[in-house]
Image (cartoon, rainbow, N blue to C red; front, side, top):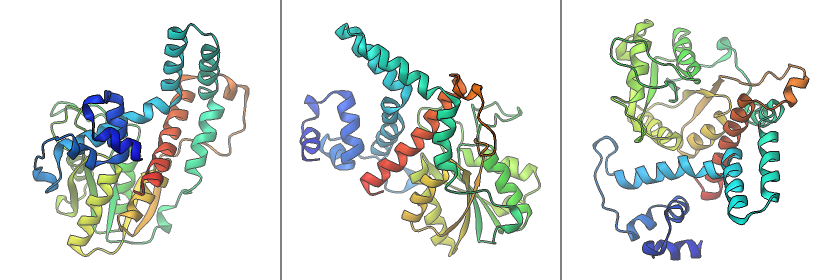
Length: 303
């Protein structure tokens, strides 16, 4: 850590990748040392927009170099530059193993098994239902059907829980990523769909703008303090719930977990197909590893 902070004090001697690594681990002191200007953000109070955006980029992009496909690319580049065959063999084996449906399902099961499905009737009541973001795909023009993403079950579950009268309030988070051309925060899109499903707009809340799960946990914690809420129902994908639960507890949020969007059928028998590489297998492996890396990152940084 001392060496990293030393690098932070000499930005002119650091490569772009080093800068991202230093910022991710050392945090805002490194940014202040580099003299990045402070700017006020109306949606997030006194937060520094430049610092927040750079941290968001670091948290989203750094795991790429530790995921199977990123490692394969690095190994191939190393083999090409050094004219060695060994790294090519390792890269091919890594690509094969990580592309197996068996591998992807095994890794995903480590996450999803931590929070088992809960029947709607068994969910206890709370002050609010919080559906985390990541619900939509690419933006569409006004008047067109929205592009629902792979995690659209979060929206559906939030609506169903409200219809079952599990809480008076339905809360969506104001997701927005700086590298996407979003005309509005994601929570407003979710709100429109919920209203179209019969939920009164005055019983739907949208948090301030957020960029990741850490921001979501703080925004929900602030909302609960403002409204004197004691407990909420937290809705997110089963593989994302372990990381989200850790962050929401850290933010002081008392919640009832309601995992959705399970990807692995634990009762399905293994077949020969599970040991043939597929793009879906690679995607599942990388998705699970990204979550596991996130949990490890927050544990190491005390977040």
